[in-house]
Image (cartoon, rainbow over all chains, first blue to last red; front, side, top):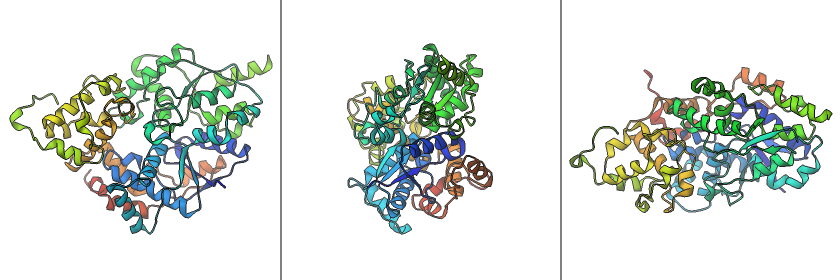
Length: 295
Length: 169
């Protein structure tokens, strides 16, 4: 029997509570229980640049605590948490000097971990454990009026060597399929890294990176961007105004997290989907949906 | 890396140091095909950033030029170069290895020190206090408490504590 823990990371529970809330509500609606582990901390990813060991050590602690609680599956909402926790998990599947160091650190803290927990991104979990067919049977308001730029982000599928080939790293399709299941159509655009990883080192470079993708999404007349990572949100939503100002462009592209989109299509009450939390107002999206509903 | 490299000041051991660093092991696989640079989304926006050049400089032994360069910190960590490299050099991991080495040499950007400081203080990058929890309660989300003892111990054991800001910073 699977026992799922939800891993929030640092950014989601403070800056992207609409993502967290809508995910919890959607999953509850499918009858799946998520367990909260209060001792979970940062996954460790933010420290990787200065210490790769520290990055995986923080993940190893989270994994060990999950195991102590009888958890079989960790569901992560942030792409960076997904990747970093999976990297740490992988170290426990092989033999290496780093693994020995991690075991020593865990022992020092009074923990142990055997590598048996499965770490997956929330969207991969929805794709694999709920499944497209089941999701389709629950769609009450197909969002056929919406054209969506589905943006999975880099670490959702990369590095592919740690992700068991669940999706194609160059042409990922799982998020596209899940968006199509809501009835929405897909915008075609040139995808590239959002730039979030460069933001701390050089802001103007990061903004240029975000610009390129936003331009391409707008060119195919996307109504909204669908995201699954709070770091992509930092670039595409929280910095969209700045990108517009810096480069003299206008996008006005609202963002929705995937569970918000799905929740709308499932007819869940809007107040459960955190729709007022999104920073770029969703008026244009909501108008399109309600207009289509009346036709 | 704008200053000219002088071959009499190169360190022939640097490449071996890099290969001993976790993430740098596969440096010698590189045959300089440029796939990393052509794939790089940072490179697409920033002419100065060139992963292939960085690899060439390591092989030449330009230790100081590489480790002191702010350019190595521009890597967004997107893994596209790692995916596409025909020689499986693991360029993204290599860039992290370089940043780890640069950190030990004292070239840690302030923004990175600030992040380690936050992890040390809160166990997470963003503080969760009463204000944040009150907002969470309004959305019917569970309260979050910070648990920092373990985290501070890990930061000490891994040596990341060396990068905490000084009192003057």
